[in-house]
Image (cartoon, rainbow, N blue to C red):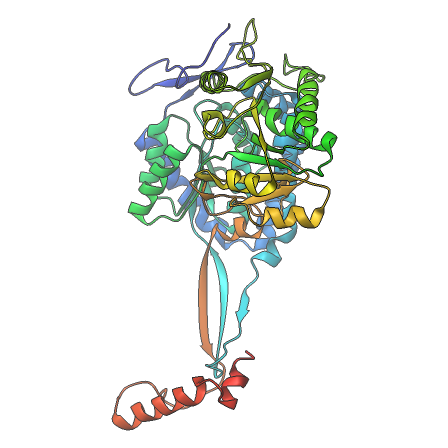
Length: 519
């Protein structure tokens, strides 16, 4: 079977000087060791980042943006080497390492570089009552942003927040997953070679204790991506310290297939959406609700397309599906499949580990599924897609919303208007109509969840503004004397004047009220 990762990567030493070994999931080869950094080392990283941030924040936005463009260009130049490392450490195919990780990252950097001046420009607020004064908000950097990132997209997920933080004038301390730490260190290497301020971007490697130390070190904001359980702990720790945070904590994306859907497009969308990155995507198609009228045709075509997937050595250009990055997800998939089959599901494709070396699991399709099966309710995070028949779209909407998670959902229909109407009834941060996955790579759009999938947004304008403090300035536009009417001293005369004025301004039907309602 080759080297299978356990609950966490192997520690080579314990206590001070401990290291973690990163393994290639496709071969079991040891790729390298990283230190398990403790509280002292993490605090040092924060101190250096905070010192560097003071000068960085003083730079004009245009200069910060040029530095980010330089970093983007360096990543483009090093794309092949970065892809090689992502393929080795994650086990994902070369095409996905390039497009889903590197290309998505440089595109997001380009978006922020091109639009930061507009997004971060001071914004005037028109006052509807205090006309003798003016207000505006401006956006200031928070300070040092702590990022705790996952193993499934070790470049694309943290890099967007690294770039947004730097553009906004912050420093960054990134704690990568202990499963895939080498990619973050490669990014740090490229960053330094590009000539950006060395201490401004720090990488701290280690396990859960390192992540806890990151929060204890006092970041000015935290961005976390990971499991619901870990997200709750991070949110609680941030709440106790009043640290603003963005939490993205998984999903159970459903695909609703309407009676009028294009079967070929829907089937291809399901297969790609379920098995890209071996199903290890927080927005993977993890359940399908297909209208009774097209159910059999859909299942048949999904089964055919799944059998066409070329799984194997991820270093090859002609491989569609690689290895499972984290071995525990294989055990999760096996348990969910066994539960479904026991409760009456039908195995259409896959269903087991591939023989030979490495952490490979066959792309698996289950039909005749029901809502009481764990595979329809629990996050799989692996290459398994269950399909359930529904009588109508109302049932599909109800079942889609019947979950504690709400990150992404999908609708397939040839009626675009109906697709949007269905989408607006689904409780998730994003809904895509007639497509899968790609919305995450749309740099302009906000990404995040509702319910137990978390709160806050990354990407888009919201993602950049979340790295800023919103500061309000209110100032006088005209001089009106030495004191305001509502200042001390109080008295009966001023009280009655205020009461009369309130009734004049706010009583329904008053002509002055109608004028004020225009503002």
